[in-house]
Length: 364
Image 1 (cartoon, helix red, strand yellow):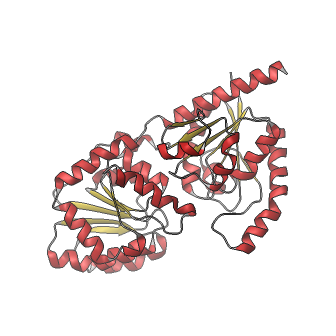
Image 2 (cartoon, rainbow, N blue to C red):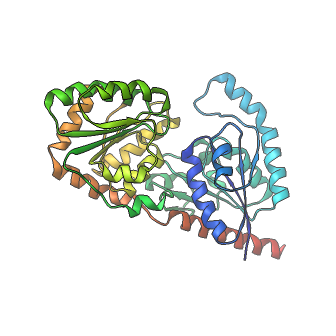
Image 3 (cartoon, rainbow, N blue to C red):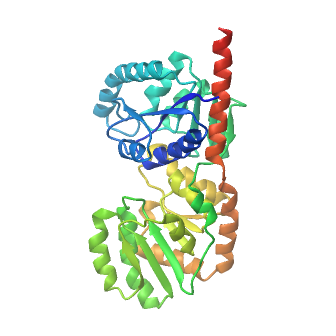
């Protein structure tokens, strides 16, 4: 039986892409879908591009922002909840699915007021602000890390992993003769990783290291870095963004990246060895906690952002390049963090919640 679902979550791609993956499965099952987001978040562009309906509410961030911003957001909250409640009343969803981000808070609170079941997907080892506040009200929490289960009531969470595009699982590793190093700070790049990469080039050249460097620098610093790299005498390329990320991950012998939930999930799906450099200003330091989960399992290395210099990058890469057994162990140990079928499982849980909600409403 087709149902209606509301999906919410946004701000960054890490919140939007998993929601889109689940929405695609729900659409294949014939359900009606509506996204609720903000005009400022990435959802404003990504959701329509994916072919889904999107409605907007106004809300800002509460966590890791200044006092003035917190007061402004707090003043918006009642109106945001009211706007979300009106959208829920009009669309009449059987369940609400949230992937977090500041837009999710008002939507989930409105769902509580309306008596609509809430399914949340928590991508990080430590749940985000909105999911922590709503934890005891959820129908089910779908988490990427076992440690996140402790934040939710017993029996109402399960480890499903984060939805990752199928091509990350399907592509087989293709390592060349040269050791390939892939550095990425995400689609926008990361200034500290760009700096460390630039500082390492003379060291790799002086050492005559057989290294091929693939560097995703982001649009802002790409041109200057690409110009310097062209005269560095090293194999590889510096680009603003790699279109086929799955292929790039599978080509790399070693990945150096931030440790956002989406990136960590893609690393696991690709069975890639990695050095993780957590974003130091991430909310609740969740990137560091994500990295620590892999480090404790022997599946990755971690270098703090403040310690990532060109010399440190060079030393870490050279140590691992000279120890293929360590790299092989990292690739094997990261595999359990990859969970294919996460989007399908989320869709199934939402359908279960909708069916139970239908039964309660029928009894009423």
